[in-house]
Amino acid sequence: MTAPERLSKRDAIRRENERLILSAAEKVFAEAGFGGATMQLIADMAGLPKANLHYYFATKEELYRRVVQEIFEIWLHAADSFDNAPDPATGIGAYIDAKMDISRRHPHGSKVWASEVMHGAPVIQDYLETTLRDWTEGRAKVIEAWIDAGLMDPVDPRHLLYMLWATTQHYADFGHQIETLNGGRPLSDRQWAAAKQSVKAIILKGIGAA
Amino acid sequence: MTAPERLSKRDAIRRENERLILSAAEKVFAEAGFGGATMQLIADMAGLPKANLHYYFATKEELYRRVVQEIFEIWLHAADSFDNAPDPATGIGAYIDAKMDISRRHPHGSKVWASEVMHGAPVIQDYLETTLRDWTEGRAKVIEAWIDAGLMDPVDPRHLLYMLWATTQHYADFGHQIETLNGGRPLSDRQWAAAKQSVKAIILKGIGAA
DNA sequence: GTCTATATTTCGATAGAC
DNA sequence: GTCTATCGAAATATAGAC
Image (cartoon, rainbow over all chains, first blue to last red; front, side, top):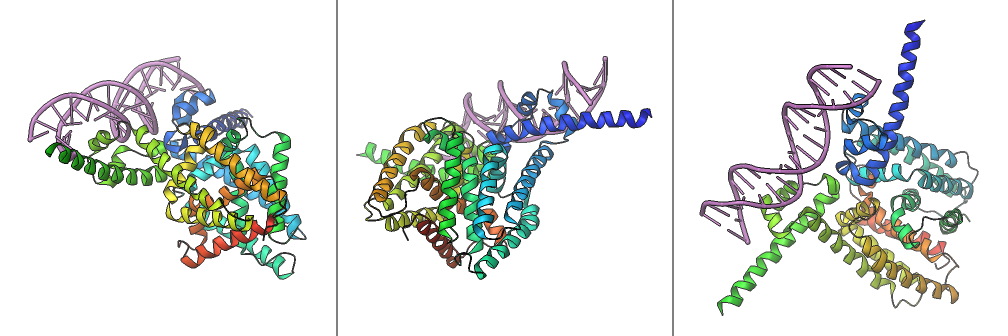
């Protein structure tokens, strides 16, 4: 009785501390980049001694890899909005909404991902070549089916996907620039709604699905 | 006679070495980020001893700042395509072409800029608040004039500009991801032309200017 | 599982001969 | 203007008491 209890309590502590560290790491990696981030900064933000980070994550790279993996999972889940949609206006519209919401709720993760890709994806190249490639090919087929059914213009599915990624993630990755051009204030609820509406309106009309 | 001659020769050497260092620095900063880049890496890529870098640029920050400034100048020049255009299809179409060409020819610079903004623009915040803000307001007025003239749909000029920046710069900043999804090969001349055509077709139709 | 003290490496920057 | 040698600071990572 005592052994399993101690084990589960130990697991609970581990889970909680890992969550604490990963959350702090996401913020620090986003704001300073991998090279600019220090274990000390992450430890301070997590409120733990630096040595504890190495107890839970052997190296800085391992901690970073976990952060990137978590972000990737969030991207993939946004794809659900894309599936089982009867037409492009519904499917792509919902996908834009989902990606814009992620940009607002997880700006740090988006930046870490962007930085990783910009530096040549040294840590997650395997994900690009397997999971992301499969995902992209699957959605391209869905778009091609919509085109064949006459529901939208015959656009190149890949360039449409790139435009969707670029436009939605821009609100997270370049959020500081947007905030500066907004008079130094973050976008309000109304402004975020207007942003989503603008993006959807232009793209859906642009592909003949409005 | 000899003094001016020595001076101009010295200036020529300085100019040439600065160009060599700035070019190497742009590449290293883009691939490793500011924190990940080392003066040693930049020196090796430039083919110079590390100490020479500090002779031409006192600190790492000063060298970085010069790199970012150079990129900013290139962005601004692309605005020429925007001006004196009779209608949005011509002006925005030319702007997309120019930005896409820059993404292809200066991918490193685009990444350094993106990284700088993602980290909160610690070095070029003043540019965002002055030059970029003025530029943005000026183009927004041009777009509003086109809207008032009935030449395009009444879209929010700022969100349109964000879409233009995001979409065109995506081909530089996320070039590695695009290359991976392209079978590991860089986009060919034909594929770049197709990308430009796709972007222009969707956006120009999307704003009612096609 | 926690935390202080420290080992080891590496980086930015400089001194000083040429 | 060039370059070798090196200093001092800061980073990752670990040892070892609790």
